[in-house]
Length: 241
Image (cartoon, helix red, strand yellow):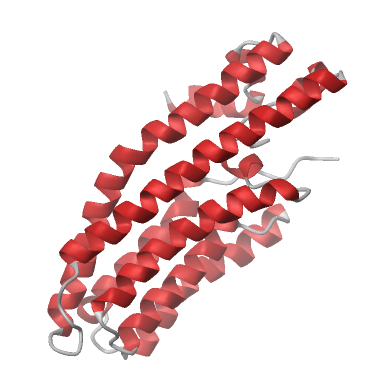
């Protein structure tokens, strides 16, 4: 059975996060002939369209698309109803917090989210790794390793949630019912400031989780990092250099 084609990470993030945010923030300036509701629909079209495209192409439900759709709906609704800034701060806090909770809760399911976030078959040669984890003791140790990495990733989302709240509270202070233009500008500033600050604070946590995963797999299987990386991922990495 052939493997589904690997997705392009940059297209994924662009269609699901970057473009919708830019349209929501700059839609009134870029598309002055559209109503706020129409701008919301245009922004929503990108993650919805990518979700349907990815579902047809790879036969998988794209998690980032779903999060993008929810995020656009929440942000757009807050803007449409001109709700006070605290609602936007709550939304910015809830999104990473709910993702972190979902990552932990998914440990009890057949498809833990940690597999999509870290132990991704597009990156890891799961068949080779599974062949080496061939005893009950090794399987138990591997499950413990995945639980540890899950909690580390959940911690990164928790940190992101707190940072989002404080950054938003500091920057988004204008009531949209008083000055919509200033409110939109503050949201735009919040997005790029938040992206920089949160990346600096959470990427080391994510890299630590990935390092622990690699080291744990190496100890359990005897395979090196080069050996556990999927052949296609190594090829793509070489092609880009």
